Length: 207
Length: 194
Image (cartoon, rainbow over all chains, first blue to last red; front, side, top):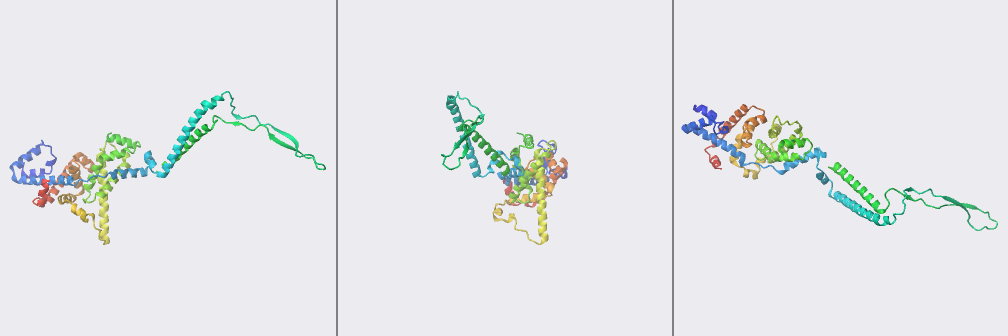
């Protein structure tokens, strides 16, 4: 190959595989041609400098780039925010209060459940012969008595008054809730459900 | 998990996997953007453009087809377009300032601490690269700094492989020509040892 052809090929020399024919030809030529060798060395220096400039001041990406992008994505699509992150959008004070309410409800539930079981095994069994009737007792009877409110007085009008009295009060027994422990269990479950619903609502609206 | 699996998960709505996908490429993309910017003191801007690139990529992830290009190639294309758009914006801003008769504010380059830190040898080569036409510069950076092959560079630049070879040849020749006056200088001789 002529010197001009070799010099034209020096620009692609660096990308050629080790066993490429053109590369072998160039290597052989620059061994014997001082002028082309000088040109080759310039190309070589230039290529090394380019690579050096890329590694000498290689920047390092910061953690904040990823965080920034994810924050931006979640700001656009709030419903995609993971649940633990959603909770952090609620203030610490609110989270603490809600946690206390949940803890209270859980305690109440456990206490109520324990009491209910205890009540059922002791007190309830002792009155096992008692027949529980649910619903309203038979209608109360009302009787009217005629009384004189005072002793007859001479010359005064005798007034007869009718007074009503309830002989048997209304007795209501409702459903399976029969005792205070049962009420505690029901109330704790209602409280727990309400708190969780509030937390869910807050996490969706404040995220 | 492979890139494809991660992308599938993200498309299915599991956005948290995008963080892992970014972790795999952020270093490369950030370095590419940093080298594409014409000043070495633009790390903050490079960070902004890098996050912009990843955000744009997420927004158009639904349109990404793996059969057409790899995710890395696709990401590089977005990064390049983002940088070019920013450079165009800067050029327009500079022109409008010049037209309005205002003197531009002191650039970040003039800050003393950066001047002290500036590596003259690197600056010399970077200046030579920055003087290249945009396509030659992109091709050279992708080839020399990011070690991409011809086909990948061709996909990113939207050129054929032979065009990329030609671009690289012209870019290297131009850099060599610009550096030739300094080859005998101590600054580059010292550099060669490093």
